[in-house]
Image 1 (cartoon, helix red, strand yellow):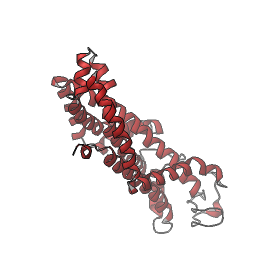
Image 2: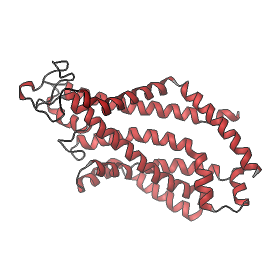
Image 3: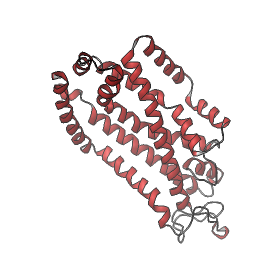
Image 4: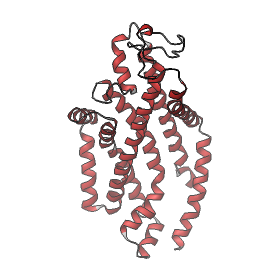
Length: 292
């Protein structure tokens, strides 16, 4: 009990210091501000625009940005580009978020069991992870997406299937380090079960690397969704996503470049923001400097 009590106090202090470190990371705060603004725009924006994403106006085909009420112009069918962009953002961000949740859950469970159990169990689990990593993920994504009926839920699951391995490796390494700490030894002496120690004692103290990996996984998932939708195997029209908006714009690059630039800029902002946040969290949750 003494070892466990001695561990809890410093962890609270470390948590408060991590928050201060994150708040002093300028790029992380910029990323947080950008992704918050983008998310709010995608959630609220479509209700504030004068046009629906499916409303067709043939007379306004290929209208450039800032033409009348079409703030971002129109597409080849005369549909408002701003309405489509914000609705596409809802789809792309939701796919990225839920793919992150699924992949983080699977990767965390595999990593915790492999790191704590070790032996043949850990070896078998990590060789499975290595096998998935050895296969090019983009080919696996395209093969699964081509074989199944495209839908947001299916694309989310496909991306999660190809993204959990990195989380598992990070968690496994962290758990192997933590399982020899004093609070784990104290739990064993108290007769706590292996499951309790893994998920009630070790896992809460491994949340730092998991949070960082989850944040970066969102960026990876958004890019993957855009990639497979751009190739025509992802989200299908008329439901928009940033990827299929790029797919529809590729033949008009010379005559209407804004059709590609605008969704491309949205993808760049989203991915860059999550990467900035991930870098900030990595620096904030790195406790090595606290022990120097």
